[in-house]
Length: 94
Image (cartoon, rainbow, N blue to C red; front, side, top):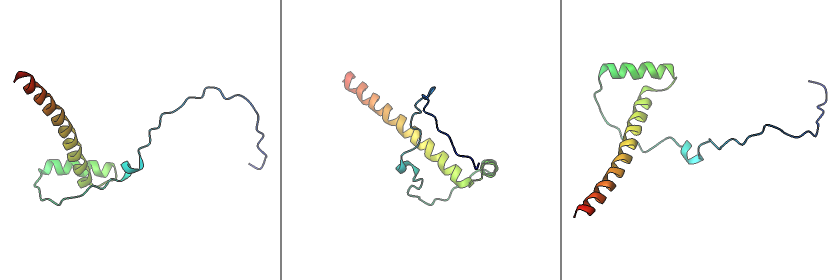
């Protein structure tokens, strides 16, 4: 590309705004405080995670940890909303 670029002053058409989809910088810090535990898992589960980890070029322990974190997050949120409903229900029946 040795030629000069010739710019024109034409109107820009078909532009659309793309919503910000990038995570906040603090969301990019993946390490939470870790606690070492010993757990016995079924061979079938470990084999599954090892196979999936190989496919996705990651560590199987990391996949298991993220699965447990997602499960805990989901159920701690649903428990919080359930406990609020239960308190409200009890307040109305008293």
